[in-house]
Amino acid sequence: MNHADPETIKNINAAALKEFTDKGFKNASLRNIVKEAGVTTGAFYGYYKSKEELFDKIVGGHAKHLTEVFTASKDNDYSDYGKSRISELTMYTYRNWQGMKLLVAGSDGTQYENFFHELTNKTVEGMKPYMKGVTDDFAHALVSGMFASYCELVIHDAQRCEAGTTMFLLWQFYEAGWKQLLTNPD
Image 1 (cartoon, rainbow, N blue to C red):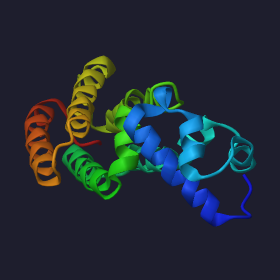
Image 2: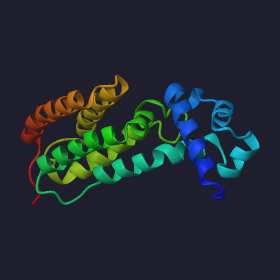
Image 3: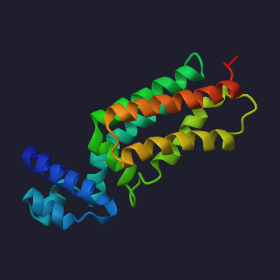
């Protein structure tokens, strides 16, 4: 990427965010992005190698953050493991709405289109120290359902307060069941 003109990069990124938000990655037009940014296609390629690289610039940091949040750690029990992460997911989403909305609902055709499936796998791995008599497939189904619920809130533009309340209630629902299935590690 050419770092010579930060204003051009800012314009390209802003135009891309608008185009990706309106149409998703698959249907976004590089022609519209460069036109909105006020640059030529040739100039664009001086800053980014591809539309994919530009999309990665916008959502990659968000995906990395969530992956770090849901990676296994040494929590006291599963309740700590889940509650703190659900809270962080919800707060982070509303601090970074447009990028997160793209990650959830606009990433088809990119390396992020299966992000929440992969995040589910990482979360199940993080839960293993707390699991007793629970298969990976069962845990995967439950965690996947939790992330699907979160994604539905984002897809349908739930307001911050509503989403926070819903995610808290979902966590209470899941926690009650998990407490029956999980135990503290030895």
